Image (cartoon, rainbow, N blue to C red; front, side):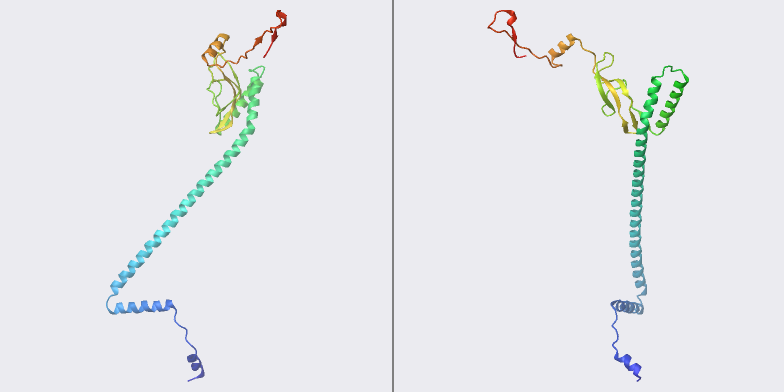
Length: 238
């Protein structure tokens, strides 16, 4: 025996791993089934196992696909909402800066000495084009005069009696209000009617009926007993 062979024999051979042992067991079982004539049964069992594994893998991949699609759809919707919010905020800021220009054009037209002059007609044309351009972007004027007072869109600057306009209706508009979609850019500043002007007799009747509180201040007058003349009359507890 050569020295090389004796060295190999003296060294300890490494043991088999669990995987190698398992593969050997499966190979031996397969050979045994083949020898006993049970190969078709083994193939059927193997096909069934493979089919179940493929079905499970398909279901897992399908679930991952559905989750990925849902996440993509949610991300797309969030991006669309954020884009719309940014666009709306930018539009609101721009239109807020343009509203005073629209007001000044309107005032210039109202105070024109000759409405039929070329200057007045030019201002009217610019005002019309300006209003139409804002309208194409969703800006609309808030109805005011003759409408019932609505604190959501109207801002009351004062209240005034009127025999022509019922109470709680807008009597006059001080400043026009505008909306962008459902957002109020600026409420309309208005004068609200308090109803018909009451006469003194009507006020007295309302006080007696309890509809109006009597705000008169009673004055007590006492006459001093020390003097008998009218000149010494004193007022007490005013």
